[in-house]
Structures are given as C-alpha cells and as structure tokens.
Image (tube, helix red, strand yellow):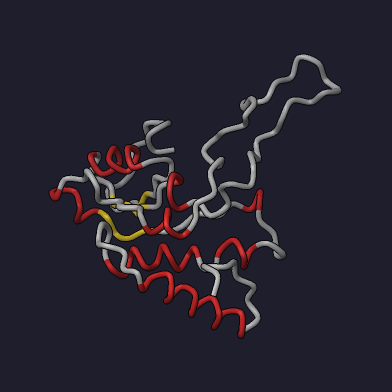
Length: 168
C-alpha cells in the first residue's frame, strides 16, 4: 500500500513489502524500516490455486482478473528448499540494511482453516526460521533436511500434523 498509494508515513513506521524484493528495495530507498518476506519465496498458502473470484457464469459480461492457466502470485507451491533459498539481502545496498528488522512468512485466511493450518505451516515456517538463524544468503547445509525432519517428528508427537520433509 505504501508504494501503490504513495503514502507519507513517519520514519518510525515498520513496513512489510510482501510482493517482491523490488518492492522491498523501493521501501528501503524511502528510508522506512521493514520486515522482509517476499511472496515469491515465503508465501505458505501458494500452490493451492487462485483465490480471486472467477467470472460468474450466470451473469454474462462478468470477468475474472485471472485467465487460464490461472497463474497468479499464489500459483507456485513453495517447498522448504525454495523457502531456504530466499536471500532478502541480495541486491540491497549495505547503506540500507540497518533498516531491515527481520522477516516473516505469509499465510492468508482465504485458503487456510483449522484443518489445513498445521500442515501448511510446518515444517516450511521452520525452513524460513533457518534463513533467519543462519543469516540470509548463508549456505544451507545438508543437515537442514535432517533437522527439519526431526522437528517435524517432535511436532507430530505433540499432536501437530506437519507435512513431510523427506522419506525416512
């Protein structure tokens, strides 16, 4: 909204540009503090189809904003490797990096409910946490899959239904 509506906000405002790293760069250049988390990498509800309303077949003349093959920003499922590959600092000048406070994953209510939430969050949210722990752009070790699998097993023992990391 900051970029689309050309808003003037106090410097103390924390922004979360989620659409792309380009949006992150633009907000940083304006001198605003940010949380990163581009929808290209950290959108956990992606891959479940477009949630935008399709045309109403009973009301001729209506049209949707998406057309076959229905590719939108939520089209591709973000697996843990894709989430781990996100480097929000790539291309950001050192002079603006002090404005980056951290990051967050995204999940929208339109495609999520109490039945699907755990499997959509875990262990992919932990893969994003790995990026935060090791530092953006750092090499992902081969141990990452094993650590996420162990975390997934611990969560299942606590009654949290996670998605699989890898076959054992």
